[in-house]
Length: 126
Length: 160
Image (tube, rainbow over all chains, first blue to last red; front, side):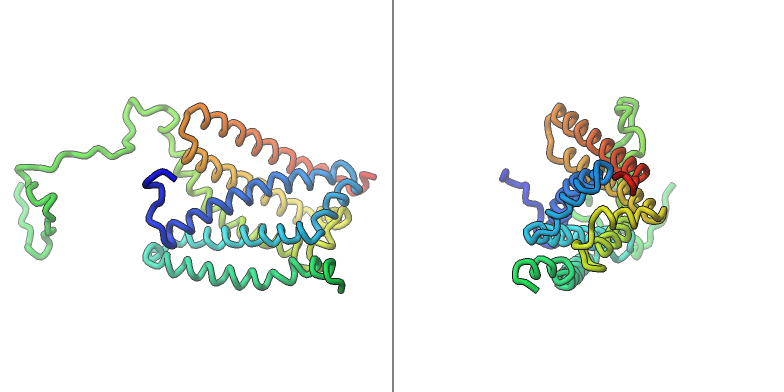
């Protein structure tokens, strides 16, 4: 890493890094997702065949990761808007970052059963 | 014209600017992005301002659209296990969900495309690389928006 590329660290910089990384991941997923959905114009069998792979435990784990990326990007995006438009936003950006992380962890805990439940039933039987 | 400045209102000068006075003014600093006659045509518009505004406006709408989409597809009613051709056919029988998905497609692709454009501008330093990457990006975004819109509006539940 060239000298001087690490900005100031802490909440401000790392939330910016995470916002970029999650944004790029979601964008590339979106390409694939539009392509797979386009299979409904090919045939019901081809679409169902591809969607069947989305119901496997491994892809289920990837879906959980996608939900994690989207929820972080959404919550941190709202924080960015608050920093930009709320008069006191810049002063409370750190508190808002930790609120985002707290809410994100809660939502991710809540998503375990709905998103990964079917994978657990596949792996360990119901 | 001499104006009286009461000590209460006077700005306290720091050491770097203390030597400047009306008789010895500080040098005029041009705004770094002042538009002059030599400014390239492409940077004379407010495109970046509107891009910045679009990211915030589309972002708020996408939070609602995408989280709703995740709830429908991955959480409610059996989660991902219920998704299949029949499920898609059922949802797209309603114009509400067609336009929901259309809005999500356009806003998400433009939001993501503009985000990636910013990242290319930040990290690709060679002018040639920038042009190529942005050409590929623009093509991919246009193709995906066109394909997705076509699929939503030409969907045929009785295809087979």
